[in-house]
Image 1 (cartoon, one colour):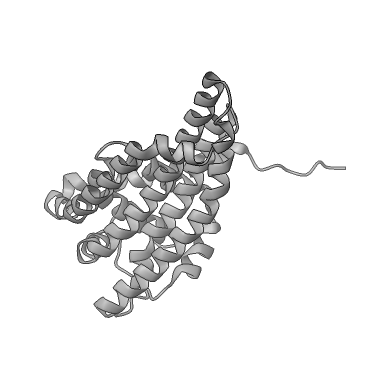
Image 2 (cartoon, rainbow, N blue to C red):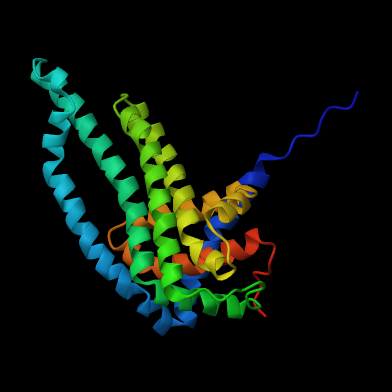
Length: 262
């Protein structure tokens, strides 16, 4: 009897790398449209200042937070107590990083909606226009964007809680959990960023979730690449316009539309 065929692992790996390549193509637009892309940095700078302050506060109070969630270690030997609280502090920073990246993206997209809409439109024009485009009033678009972003951040927070708990597990919490966190963060980040081109076609969060699931490796490749860039100091500010451009290509690809320039 003929053995069942097995899809090559390289297929998923290749699609993952292809997804990361969409971000690189978005970065390439800096060279072609530097004025437009630099304009997209302005709302990211505003959000970046706010979230830098929040991150500084988290780092400042992380020792107190670690002690707050580990009262059981108060009477332990100092060395063991210190180790447990270092692990707790790292777990707090990991959860803060995950939620920080996602909320930064949501707030930046809301603040810079006109800029990012223009960037996305320019990308669509390069690749053949927007089939099925609908006219969406500005304030209606902003309200939908905020509502969907709040929903995504809430879901990611629910996912982040068990990851936070798993962060207390020695070794696993400092190796496996960050990888899972990057994958989860990348998935939700991709869902956030493709909102602009999907709204232009009159499609909401359930639509884009369903379409992106059809090629999860590509979506994860793009999302994880953006997530890792956003963790670099000033990375989120500088990469945000390119991420919007790359997300437009991801949306077109998920819809079966051309991502080759006309």
